[in-house]
Image (tube, rainbow, N blue to C red; front, side, top):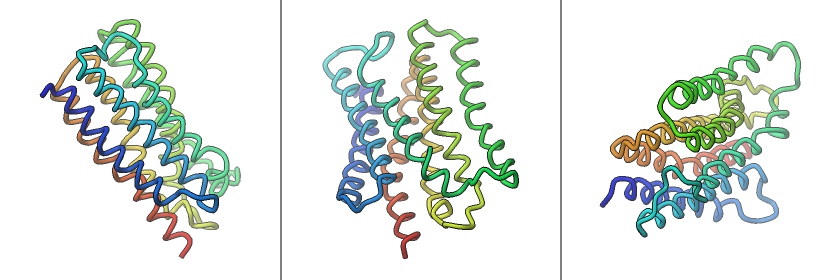
Length: 221
């Protein structure tokens, strides 16, 4: 089997497992919207990878031309950003000066994403299409990774929920940078790297929703 097909199938199957777990655990009006949004993030990736796998199996290309699988990646990152931006972030950060360093340190995550984009796409060899797609994904990773890193290091002393969700934020941060690594590997059309990244991404996606469920349960008990 082609390694690109194998990578997409592995990621797809794992993402669907995580998505179904989230649907089972977080369905219902009384379940937290936060957990539902993270479940939708995993679901976006599952359907995006399914589209890419089918496209490859049917002999079509996923490199160099726009295909809907890209929207799955961007959608998942937008949901991850939206979940932490707003209510969840306000539970930890009241805007006071004592937490200033915990707002500045997380800027390292989007900075790293932008640097990787510049090195491998703007300064490296990449088509205009790949630069545009990589740029969109980098912007999405930048927004999501800022809050995941922030909540990973933030000293939550009042509500406790941020501390309970640190494992989830770690998995989400790893997933986001695997998205960038996947972009680079696909741009280079390096099948071995794509396969390794696909396996790692699958492991991360299957772990995200259980980590959220564990964190929410720990917070409420």
